[in-house]
Length: 220
Image (cartoon, rainbow, N blue to C red; front, side, top):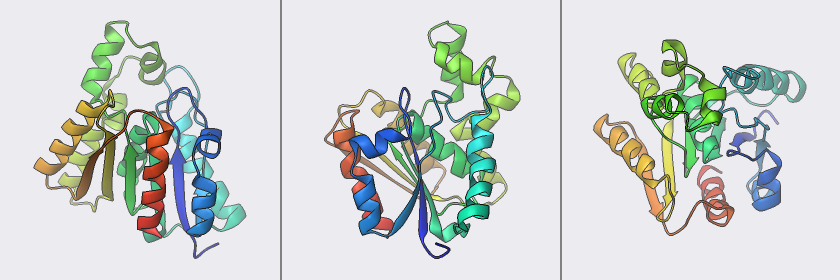
């Protein structure tokens, strides 16, 4: 177990960890490529310590890794840890690994919900997104900075910290494509090592399943 590579899989909004097993072939793929999967259920938390709800990010980033280390002795070596998420989980994957870059070698965001926090704040203030309000509340400065995937990159660059390699994928018919394009452009301008692939596909498990297999092949 100590030698095996570990992949955290983060689900999207209105989903849970069981979706990966139900709608993708991740279990046989992981078996074939000798990967250990960690698949938490994080509700519609946006992988935050919610303003109105449980402290899901603390659970994901601190409590689960400690439990796994103590009970299963999973490798904590950066070279053997990866995080993948789709939709809301794509945002979660970036947030987790950009907050703890020393823990992860690569990030894989599939059709990620990659809005800047400035847009989330406007949606909350306009009363359009109760889900974002529950996660981020008033978006005070601390919440804003800790959940803004643009700010997290800027801080790592400022501190000359090694950033995990970022893989972005999105379907050409996906409603989140423009946010993914904007984030890829930002990474390019900042000279952050990354890849951005626009494939034929929409916001669906049919598309994500193929990409998950491709990512597992890449890292194994």
